[in-house]
Amino acid sequence: MASHGGQGASKRCAELEEFVADYLEGRLPAPAQQRLGAHVDECPACRAFLASYRSTVQVAKHALRRSSDRAEAPEALVQAILRSLSR
Amino acid sequence: MRAVTPSARRLRVLAPRQPARRGCRRTADRRAQEAPDLRAEAVLVGQLCAGDRAATERFVRTHAGWMLALAQRYVKDPALAEDCVQEAFLLAFRGIGTFQGRSALKSWLHRIVVNAALMKLRARHLCSEQPLEEALREGGRCCAEAAWVEHATPDRLLESKEAGELVAAKLLELPDCYRIVLLLRDIEGLSTEETARLLGTTEGAVKVRLHRARAAFRALVEPVVLDYL
Image 1: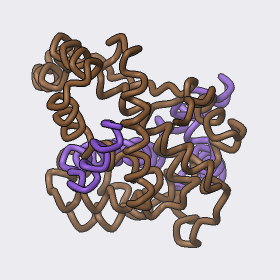
Image 2: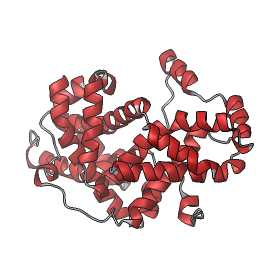
Image 3: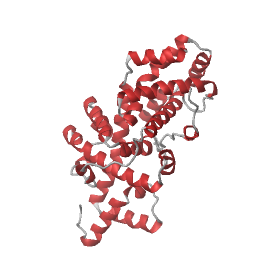
Image 4: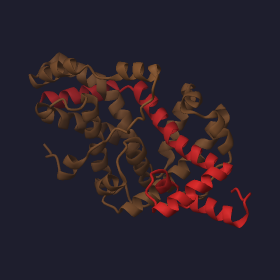
């Protein structure tokens, strides 16, 4: 964890890590949101952390969309569905 | 035949908002290609309501594959996923007469499948709290962060078919309660409140599980990222 700014920066880094989901969605109280925003502007490690956090979501969405696009249902399932629909 | 429950009726899947990008012709072209032909869908719905067998078979064959992949993300077990898909088609056909075309047919089916999967999970109590493995619990800051940021935009990372499949498989390694929250919040785009309501838990619990799920997923995917940079 980055600690280039001494104890204060480390404390902010830890605070960002704990509240990262709320921070990214802007759901923290305004003073905390601003405090962490200012820290992110000054902390390369936290900027990288946030970017990778956001990328995780993008990577998951992309991978799932592509795997769904290629998916095929077994013929036995298709036939079972058609039988159940024809009843 | 099972009735659609109140919780099923409440399920709403909100498509994640895409920021407007000026001049991004590639994005606009892709969206145009992916946008459903609403007139063709209206014709298809009419055929399905009329019991057209050929249309029914085309419909099932068109959608069963991605519906199965979607269900399996939630329930993992292939046999259970097939049950979900079969149930989803039954529900869809029961409700096809009420489909008004306010959303694309695929979006409507998507919601039905997700709801069918969640009901299966609830029936089997598969959404209760589970421990994360030690290695995944420590995934607050991953080692490859700088490299991830510099190199791993989704397209670059996942232009490899194998990498995409590995990443999708890593999601299934998450314990159910974390995977489900990640899917509902980040993939389906539901709010914390909606997710909590669907799972019968508190918003606080959803936030904690989501944070742990994302951290654990990043830890799981990190080796794939490093291999494919």
